[in-house]
Length: 202
Image (cartoon, rainbow, N blue to C red):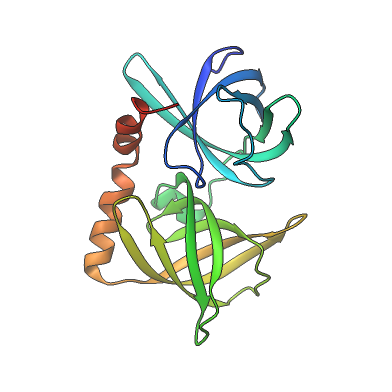
């Protein structure tokens, strides 16, 4: 995907329900610096995952990025553009960049935990959270989107320690047939849903 400075990019982030129009101030292979056209940057936090959307010549493309720095004075946000490593599960199941909130709890616990999901596949997700959990921890999760609610069981398979939160790889381990079918449709319709949102971007 070729991005150029001064062109426009749309962002989806979990904290707002619309696509945010941004001007590209600086772009490299691994970095992206944007200015929201609204001038507002207060919806961003460090490490937040976003989905960047471009639409040119009737072609829509989406890619992930993570907030690296917020310049409140100049109304700019800098993002890291991760290089997606291809692991065994990713060769089989496509991973979709997202920016969604998931409510979860440890097995046999009623305490609610909050995760921000940065990518999804049929059988896994990458997420960040302030909750400090162990690898192999079992979770029950509620994923609520604009149109659907999904209930999963999952297991933490890897963990990274970040500056003020934790990054997790979570394997989705159990869901019923109806949920599986609905989830497949949800993932396959990602680009279609973004297309519907483009006209309402602001």
